[in-house]
Length: 104
Image 1 (cartoon, rainbow, N blue to C red):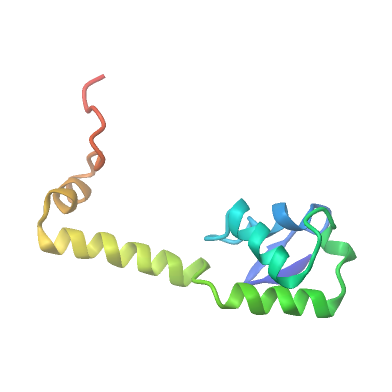
Image 2: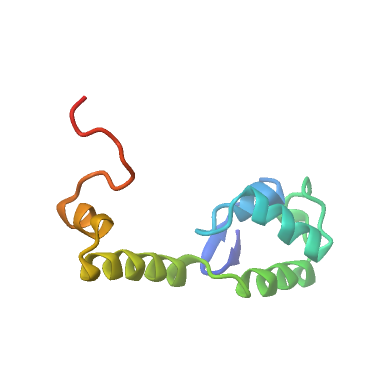
């Protein structure tokens, strides 16, 4: 298994699908990463050379992913709660934030 951004990436899957195992990398971002590095989307991770993996690691390293993204997300929610705005109060009380019904 290859390791990118501290995550074990499955070898037996296509590059686009494997990259989505990294928190913060979805299908669109994975396709952009493959295009930027010149890797075919359908190639399996096991078939990539070490140089191509290093290139992928560098591209992913420029993004906000995994722990940094999780921390940033938590800090945004904490900021809302500290402000005491409507969304912050909903987060604090554990209620739906985006207008969903709370009855049925």
